[in-house]
Length: 83
Image (cartoon, rainbow, N blue to C red; front, side, top):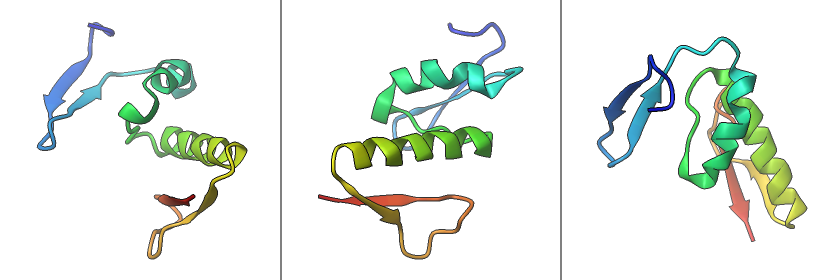
C-alpha cells in the first residue's frame, strides 16, 4: 500500500490501474519515473504530457528518431521510435 486512499483495479491486459487523490501531480514524478517503461500515466493529461516529453528527450539523447504517430491527436502526443 502506497497511499491510504489508493484504489487498485485489474485491467484486461493483466496490468493494474492505480488511483489516488494527489494534491500536486508533480510530486508523483520521481515515483512514476522509477517504474520506467513498466508504467503508463493516464491522468492528469499534464502529467502524461510531461512524461512523454521526457521520454522523447531521452530517446533523442540515445540517438533515436522521434516523431508523432500517423493520425495521433496533439492531445495524446503518441510517439514512435525508429532506430
